[in-house]
Image (cartoon, rainbow, N blue to C red; front, side, top):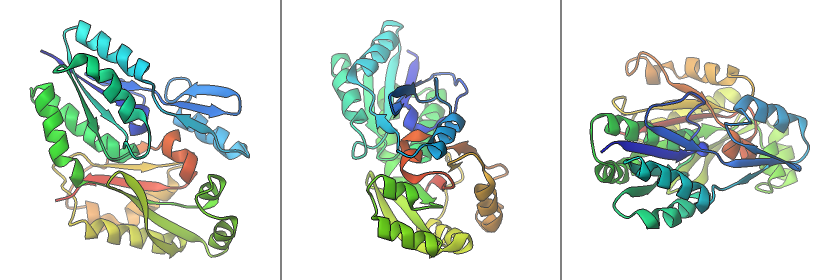
Length: 280
């Protein structure tokens, strides 16, 4: 029996079609306009609208009905399904998938990635690898549950402005952070976003990011790994890659790079860089 991997667009898998993969879009609302993430709103278009607007957009979880439609179609076509969602602590999308999957016991398996954006993406990439190896949906889901705690997502933010707009830091903190060029380093731990530290300036921020990656015990280069960036330019990411060359030069010939979309971009704004990998 063939396997279909289904995920949400918060995984930032990119726009290109992939064999055996279906991406269900989150809804992003700017004012009165609703867009389907990755369908009628690209990541580039999202950041154009974000930097031009005064108010933050709103993001909406995927409904049980949307998952039900996708699951039903796959099962009717004789497929088993592994659905991988963004962290249940960050969105109701996982619960929507679980609700829809109740009708398809033994055929649809739902995995809470306990992550988001490129951290979720590396788990989906691993699921696609296991699918190619011929594992059943049950065994793929079981493997993902075993390894997902090894997924590390660490990110460096360029600004506190969007955290201020979203009410996550005060105006005073954001103002002081702007004056001092404070760059927070954040991670996803146990499905939640946490601040690991703060640095003054991009160079110190890059150094702190490298330190946090080293503290995980190292990168397992035999597993998927992805770097991502927010905004309209990858200049800050290129600078980080150059500054942290020692992390990569002996482990991999080519780095996988992608853009981070609206689900996270809404809250961190442009200029953020993120690194996702499996720890050793």
